[in-house]
Image (cartoon, rainbow, N blue to C red; front, side, top):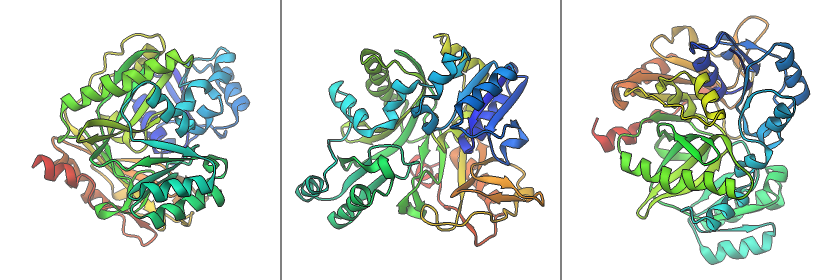
Length: 422
């Protein structure tokens, strides 16, 4: 098969790398891709939102399967556009992608279909939201209703912090139209984890669980980011809890989407919290998670291209997984997730040996140097028999990045090692 992957981040690099290893794949293309993806796929210089150019390319190059990575083109209806032109495409259509595109839609679905989640209220009025926050107190969680590249969430530990964030979102329009409406939620306490599943209608095929680290700095300090590192599996969360999450959250949301006339085909990502009352839903995404994909897909033994086709045909993909652990650490631009510079040369890449480097925001300059082109620049992932072994391997490699232009967390996986005594 010839496969086209749409996107330019670390998630897409992980997908392209896995597809390039696939026995059923002859050639992988990626539009627009990045400097790292160029090592495993042929780059196509077309933007993710240029639907006509993308479908023209797919037609002209006889692409057998297109896989959509990011959320923005999904919400804008790229899958519908491909399907209307009789092209095989993996991902949810516009009606189903609203599961991620609107936090209020997602929360209303959970309430209607009794899917465990935090108590919430939705506001487009600053004054009403302010009164609600003052009445509820802190800690409290604020979410921009629309897509905000993983940065539209504030976990406010004080009322003052919550009101400041509310003003930025609703009054200051920090995320544009995405924050014209705000969902305010009860603060959930417990162990956070991520669970992705391949879905077609009511059929749900879960992947292995992963744990992400959202805060920018060590010991979960600093602002929320799109993710600073992850690992899979999660030794301190039992299979019983994972099974509960599938039965009480993933399967019910898939069934609910069918009942609402919005059947979902693609990957549903569930951000979950293991509370005293069991698993609860923090959020749903309508695609592979980032950086979770970078540590989950390396553990997949099945042919990924065949998995995509099986799911599209509504056949059980019979997922097979390695027992080993994978841990990944993100190298980020200094200042991320706030203001940061681009165009910094990334030195130390040639010294990385016993690990995978998955590029997120990179490009090659006119001198052939790999430079930064985003806040999260790349992720280094290692495999080991245990989380501890994978962690040791990764941090040996991360020591090669000696630059004041970048930073990374030094404690990815620490919780798992402490809890599981590995």
